[in-house]
Image (cartoon, rainbow, N blue to C red; front, side, top):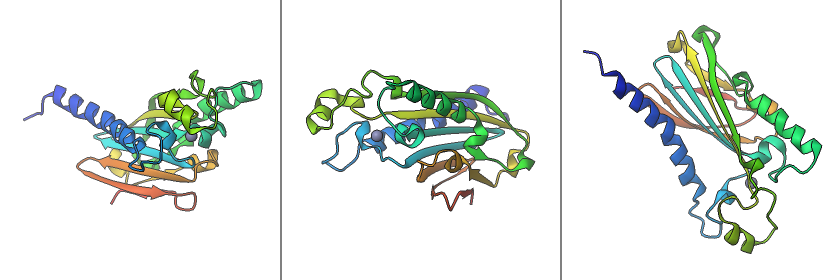
Length: 200
Ligand SMILES: [Zn+2]
């Protein structure tokens, strides 16, 4: 019996969406002293969700803009505009984020790069707690949200993934990975001197 196609698609969508809600929960820190908005993201840290199902690898990365461009305000100079352009170009190449085993024969598919750096809220903040309360969601912080899809001819060969983003973005100090690999799932914390994620 074949599982109906629509169920496979639905499951795939759910898995793609689920990490986002997990990230939102993460933002809502239990620490009562922190503002309940993006302000509770941690500079230096990146969230990475990996879903490997059949021959498709979905990658979702959420990072404070600080790690990527070195600032979180709306760009006000040509230099800052260029820094954002450069970051978007780097983030658009899957190979700059991670490396897969050659034997897996993966090809990059669609990618999306979104950033709240261009939001009017970015950069409008002043360094007071009151502004955090009044400005709400984006007060003084900005993020990058990146997705990549890979199609792999031999996904069974993917027993590990090496994170390359540390080399391209020195502001990234720690990556919190959540992964789903077929029927298995797990989590890992990777750092510049520990870049290899093993699926075991
Ligand atoms: Zn921030």
